[in-house]
Each structure stands twice: as C-alpha cells, then as structure tokens.
Amino acid sequence: MKKKILVLLVCLLVCSGRSYGSVYNLSPCEDTYVISTTPNFSYGSSSNLSVNRYLTGAQYVSYLRFDLRDIPASEAVASARLFLYANDGAGMGGTDAYFVSDDTWQETMTYTSRPSVGPAVLGSNATSGPSATGTWQYWDLALTPEMIANGLLSIALAANPPSSSDNRHRFNSSEAKTNHPYLLVETSPVPLPPAAWLLGSGLVGLIGVRRRLALG
Ligand SMILES: [Ca+2]
Image (cartoon, rainbow, N blue to C red; front, side, top):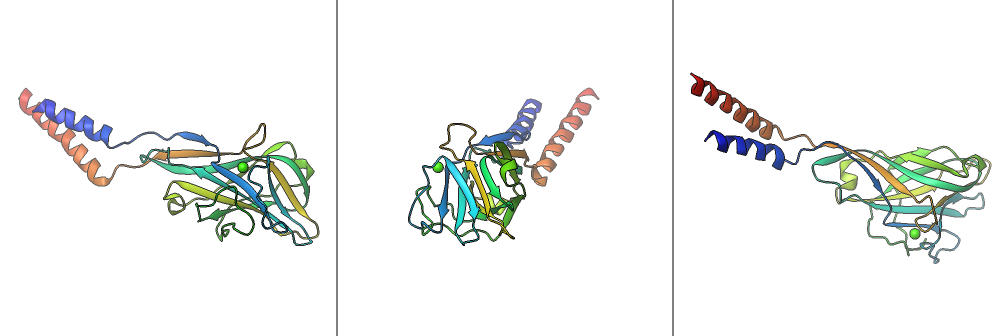
C-alpha cells in the first residue's frame, strides 16, 4: 500500500507537467513588408524588412509571424523580445511593434491584402537613423495570454509619424544571408492548480502517518 502511495505521489508530480522556465530562440515562419504606393506587389522574398513613413505619404509596414506551439503547455510566456538587425536607417523617429490578430496572412501578401494592424502597441524602439545601421535593435513585447492563445504571434512594425523629416528603417529579413530576425522568449513554470497541491500534500501527510503507525 505504501509503495502504491509513493508511486501515485511521484506520478502526480511528474504527470502534472511542472517544469522550470526555459529560453526559446524562435525564427519567423513568415516575414515581409508592404508598400502603400505599390499596393499589389509582394516583397515576401526580399532580404529586407522596411519600415518607412515618408512625408509624401508613402508608408512601408513590415510583418512577422512566430510559431510558439513548441513551447510546452507546462510553461507560460514570461517575456518576449523581438530582435532585428538594422542594415540601413535615415531620417527621424522610431518604430512601434503592433499586435496583429489575423494569423492567416502569408508573406506573399500585398499592401492591398494586408491584415489590419493593432490597435495594441506591443513595444517601441526609439533608435533610428544612420547610428542604428549595423546594430541589433529590439522591442520588448507586452503580450497577454489571449494574444498567443492559438500558439501563433503576428506582429507589424510601423514607423512613428514623422515630425519634420522622413522616418526610414531597414532590417534583415529571413532571406538575408546573415543576422536573421528572431524572437527571444523566456518562460516560467505554470503553477500547479491548488487542488493538485492539496492532494499532493495530503498524500505526503498520509505517508507520514503510516510511517509513525508502523514505527509505533
Ligand atoms: Ca520573407
């Protein structure tokens, strides 16, 4: 009987899936950008991701999607940071990362067929201009569990509106030769439900009682 209880207790702890947090380095499964002035052209195979806003009105918006479904259900996303390698920059202003609720788009899409952006701003990066060229830039993403409930995360990058200058950024895409985009995700263990802890501690107590009885 004692042996059975011990086996049950071990199974409870192991089968509960409780684990320690981990770090995941994820590559985008899709990445592209679209341009308002060439609304029917696809840039999905480009080695760049452009995020521009010109005073003339032309707008460039980049999209990336990440698949988080390899993260075990026993782990919760504690933080997510998007990294992009800047290969050119000019003008003034920064870039905002927006949540995109539509996860069905493909990188062959165009400005005409693009999904809507936001309104939630996930994170911002104020660095721009030539000083950013040749450096890794990042955005800390404020995600909610609802945003990644289906295991997919789509993000759009758009330039902050310019004040008195154009706002232009260019990053390496997945098709670049080196320095590809990635998402660094840190997880934390999902806590055991209170009922499981109660059952576990009850079993430990029961073992203690049986030991005392056996010794007595
Ligand atoms: Ca691409």
